[in-house]
Image (cartoon, rainbow, N blue to C red; front, side):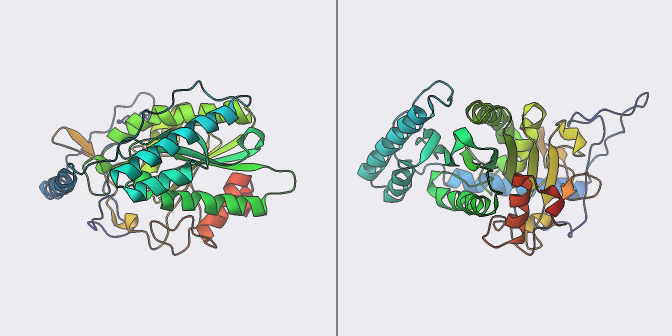
Length: 351
């Protein structure tokens, strides 16, 4: 997200309403509310955001990426083929690591070498890279958490994303009741936007990612069984991805962490039967980003309503004093509450 303190914490500026682009219907017999036009000052601010966001990615666009083999193309996994799926993607990651090392990119080679020893539902070492890693016994899990990352997440930064999955998996393993089996799926299944880029302020990447997330959830349920309890834990721009996928997603719980907004005015506007949760750490700079949505140069910029506001209607839970990258920090209030959500201990979730 673009770190820009334009409005104070707790303030919001929002265009659009019921019957708007989020698909929320208007009341029977009523006309849609008129959509106010952003002030000239707001248009200026948004134009500056877009201009600044364009400059940085263009400056680094020519940076070469290490070569990598094409990904393995396999049928959707089943309990019977899961081991074969893991093995095929491990082999691909191993070859990608070899090619990256020959190219001189030893950091990428090290990341891919680690993934070559992991349980992978998917892997693609080309470009910024994609990977779907499983922690735990997915085929026999009763409760599964799928982590959806935000901006600036790729194979080059995969270590920090993997650390969040390991922290959650460790706590779930320690705190799950006897007989309850858990698994965590770290889904780097889309090209995430840069923190300073035009893409991070629009829903474009999320629209592209949503069908892939739905496919991943279908694959998880095909392996673990349709009765598995599945939670999506969606961080930052990843909450926009989850919101775009929510209407056709077989999830039981969706948690929005450090969310800039979802594009919907309310939790009901996500059109899902899943329970919607939201949290923001006291030190998270997203709280200072204006929660607005406006048309600028033919593009909708911003994501509208604040998911932790009472008007949005999510189940808001405590995240402590942490910052934007601290929701899965070991020992944190937010990790404790996320663990309770995944385990279905909803009455123990603190607010």
